[in-house]
Amino acid sequence: MDSTKEASVTDLKRPREEEDDNAVVAAASMETDNSVNGDEKKEPACFSSVIPGWFSEMSPMWPGEAHSLKVEKILFQGKSDYQDVIVFQSATYGKVLVLDGVIQLTERDECAYQEMITHLPLCSIPNPKKVLVIGGGDGGVLREVARHASVEQIDMCEIDKMVVDVSKQFFPNVAIGYEDPRVNLVIGDGVAFLKNAAEGSYDAVIVDSSDPIGPAKELFEKPFFQSVARALRPGGVVCTQAESLWLHMDIIEDIVSNCREIFKGSVNYAWTSVPTYPRHVQ
Amino acid sequence: MDSTKEASVTDLKRPREEEDDNAVVAAASMETDNSVNGDEKKEPACFSSVIPGWFSEMSPMWPGEAHSLKVEKILFQGKSDYQDVIVFQSATYGKVLVLDGVIQLTERDECAYQEMITHLPLCSIPNPKKVLVIGGGDGGVLREVARHASVEQIDMCEIDKMVVDVSKQFFPNVAIGYEDPRVNLVIGDGVAFLKNAAEGSYDAVIVDSSDPIGPAKELFEKPFFQSVARALRPGGVVCTQAESLWLHMDIIEDIVSNCREIFKGSVNYAWTSVPTYPRHVQ
Image (cartoon, rainbow over all chains, first blue to last red):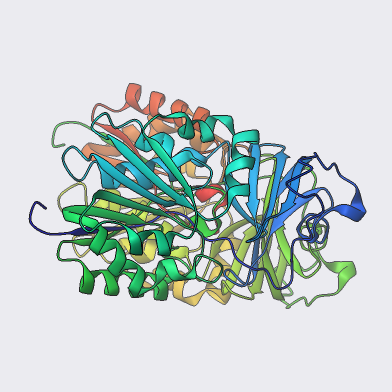
């Protein structure tokens, strides 16, 4: 651990992605910031195509199955430069953040993902001081990183400002992570950020990404992990969401294989249970 | 372990139950054993009420959410003395067994549940010889118990013969458990069976039950666990499905509390990931 770079590959979150058959048709823009209520005509396809009054998550990433949540009220619909953004109040899972038709977090179960992807790496090295978060626009990983007293600096690079703004507006208990004075938020491309990062500068890198098909595609590829390896100090640790062992074994194998090649330390896959991630994808 | 009875409470499978809003209307009887294809008028509500051509699992046990599988063909619909029984070919999870509107197993992921509820208890004591399975009509637990060479006798008490017959017909890789010569199958009430079992006669009892609302209600209550304790030898082990830690903490607390009172050894809750059990219920 002290003399090698270590990768802990953690499968925690399944991705958002472009939905072929269930594209989200967003109506409101971020500028207006208006709540959009249940007008049938304005509702995105994922709300109206399956169960009236329910949100259904269907994707070519998990063909032949769908997970649905009962909607009480649509609180926000927007289209950023990168993706469609929706927030709704569900009947039983609290407020829900949806990007490109895929649930990113619910108030009821977000803790499982955030804690897993953060404390697993930060507890695997002694006294992490400088931490980089790639993605994680909702702020939940920041919230968990901030609980580590040894941490002195938390850099974060999120590509989509709308996700940050929406989280601050609708998920204060998650976005509270931004309030920590150690946080430096950069809105930009995580791949470019890492390329420009000083060599050996981070104790830990947490990649809280979406899926390998959409805008986060590069975050699953070898050059990205090479950049991570360069930015980590010897003995540093990286943790990335790595898809579901029930659905995406090919992706996991690629990540593990790339990481075994690039990092000198141990490479492991871990998972936890997040009800609103399909197939218990972790 | 040698001088006390031990309960290992394992949360593995969520229950079937009566569905208020989505009652299954079964058409074919077991006697005819006919395949029933997708005639809209004959389809049970759970096939047609949500996504046409999809099976949707909705229940008051998990209000406000639904899990849906795309149906290729309905292979069997029947109504036993205890419940509605459906088998369908899904698009991506193989054949699926549904009791009272709730998925019991799919060919794709049944291994996770069967292995967890079986090997956890059987590997926690040395050389189990006499094992009792309550429920488990699909035969999958039998299949896993049979892999333990030390086991000499496997008694099983399943209340619903239709589940056994349907499993043998449609799920040969699961029902293969019945072919082991050590298996003694009794069709009957598990509660009564245990009351009549000889005291201290089993090394392990595995309760592969459905939910605490339907016909399996008694399997979650104190008198049942008292019968289990009586039937177990000192140092024996019991493992029961105990619902989801995301949804049913009250049920889990009751089971653990009752077991701590009744059994002298350790009482633990464990879980695993089964994609088609809702909320990663284990």
